[in-house]
Image (cartoon, rainbow, N blue to C red):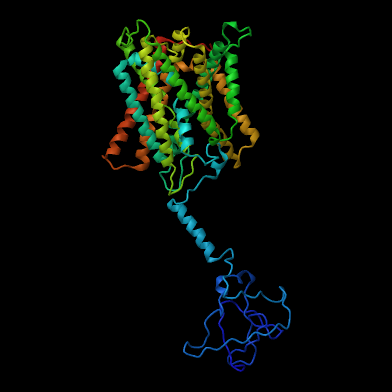
Length: 568
């Protein structure tokens, strides 16, 4: 067989002829002459980057040039090396076909191109979520490892607060029947709009709307969405934070007086100083970096909210009704006064169901994939949270009105508890109730401050295309806390404006989600969802305008103790 000629085809460019003889494709292989030629064949070579490619792992590389019917020519036997090979003078020897080659491909290989193409396709169809790189720098979406428990804690803390303490006051204007009916309708209405927002969080495949403002801009346009939503959301967050400082400072002062009693010899602090103490506590907790990092704070806030609501209505009911209590609606001199009182009561109920401006932000902290979308655990957490919210709000409204009737003060049931039962109730229970209110206010301040802080940092990251440094984050949160303290001191009567706040917050809670569903989802005309959302949105907007007008008119007609820079 020594005189037979063998011809192989190769799929790679041949290298120029070499002077040393006796080198072939394999280490120590003899040179094989080409058919019909008296010279040696060029050795088979390849670029070093392709030596480990699957196309070079076969032996032989390609089929022989002879027809399939021709007898198979055996390979030339290998001979020992005569000249040592060096990396600079000869290519590497390909691995044997009996062994699986390493799967290493060059950067521009077809496999890598296929992977990149598939990733782009999955992003287009929504299998992979495209995240804004700026989201990783902002406090709301900096961490996306939330779960159903975090969602329940945050929702419960944002849904129960000081506004629950004035719910019995609404019943003094509406009475038993209309009071319970209005609360029930408002509860299920806002639960429906909450479900709409959760579904709209990922309405477009691969895109997440982690902020209420982002969803509004997508639905109504950048300009109109900003006009309709930015001011109410910022006003709600800043207003609730300032009112929380007022309630928290007053409760802290009340707790000190109950614990210290008349035997205390120390000089008591003034109301402003108690506000400052509470503000310092809130400012320290405000330095937590992102929304998921305050999950523990929200857990404590949720537990204390359920605890103090339960304590207040249980103590009030156990002590019984006050002598001479009446459940008839408050009598007024004119029909206009009666209408104003009814509108104020509706505003109080509307303001008691808050937190819709935070639901998208809470959902944005959860991971989401096509197989496990975030709306499923978010809705589970919301259902648990609102079940507890119902157990807090309805008993405190019904039980408080049953115990105090039309004698309940305008400041709410907490003041009524200390005013009517300070002498016949354990000071430990009263002090514990005040302390629970303080702790809950600290948790509420953190979660309602987060959208404002996020908006402040968003302006910096958009302008400079980099995350906020630590000193700037610290300065932003200290600045917002200081502004909230200034508003609380300048306007200590903010808790008396619950009806007006309710009218302002009502579109964000009950109207805008319905319109956004219609614009984005485009339900079939004259279908059930089309009728429900159009009617709910229109009624919500009309009711909001009426409540705002009624709230302002009530302030002008009945008056309010403004007490600028005179906190009590």
